[in-house]
Amino acid sequence: MKRTLVALLLASCSVKSPPARYDHPYTGRLEVRHVPRQVAEDICPFSRGATGWGCAFLRTSSCLIILVEGASPEVLQHEIAHCNGWPGDHTP
Ligand SMILES: [Zn+2]
Image (cartoon, rainbow, N blue to C red; front, top):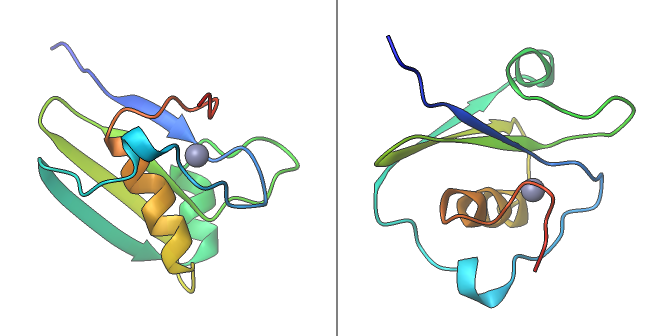
């Protein structure tokens, strides 16, 4: 079975504001899960040594966002931008 799961990572401990073209509501099916930090670290491909607050798993027409409990609204905004196609390396 073909799996198309693209993991995008939050590579920095500071939450970057997304570029304007990715900074809008996601139009597909969006699922957001708030999980304890330990669970997020198991699920998300956080870079070693970096503190991550969330990650986004982009599928064909849906997007799953994992957020550490207590993550700020800016983290959600950041991850939604990944759902909208913002590359994981945070290029503008
Ligand atoms: Zn990111």
